[in-house]
Image (tube, rainbow, N blue to C red; front, side, top):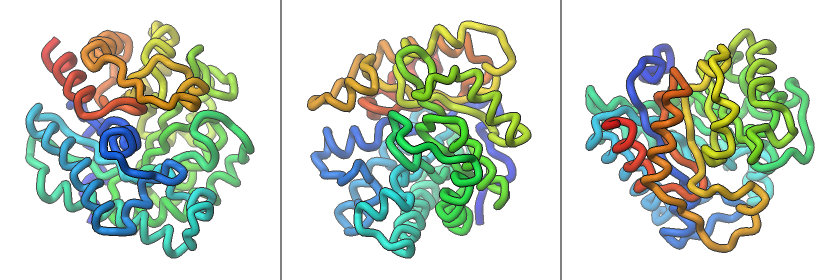
Length: 314
């Protein structure tokens, strides 16, 4: 059974961490090949499974050490029909990979959760297209139909929630939210922004959140920002407008590079973990409900450790 679906513990004031950049660690640190950046493909053999187990184990131990909660985000960012087809997966095979991803997180939670370190299992939904730009945009109805099968698998596999990560435009976020609502799954929307703090479409983050909330009766449990460096969005958060209170989570990049520059980069830009931790502490003054702290491109457990040290002991 799902443990937290009807009472997400991160909606309290307690601090929860997430993992860092999954693909960063697997590719640059572990030397693994991820076709089409698809971590879910590792479930095809025992060696791949073990790599993912050890990855999530690291963050479970980190949560225990710092006595904080943990959002266990499934390795399914690419596990949707378009990307699955490119990798040769049938619908049935893709569904099985999604189930395996959630089952792994149940194993981690069973082994590492404590009363203090509660661990929430989140089914990760990625964009249908590229995570940095909008190629072919869907209507909300198209997005709802497209993403529903994956969300249904998460529900049946007893995930606690759904998280749409690296959303590039509001209509896809609306469709995912409606799909989750239709099967009574809590959903979180995480937008990515460019160096000007706006979505890749040019829409201000404030307007994107307002559009999704208006179209879904404030359907998302909360919002996040991911795959951008704090310098890219800190200025737009310098306001006391109500929309800022809808943001509970950050999964920032280690690098200050733009999405276009990251796409062209051949070497890993790890940034500075301690500096990133201090930037999170500064942002916590601007975001009154910020309590989900994690990383994205270029980050690993060292960055999350630094964020914990900065934000838990200011």
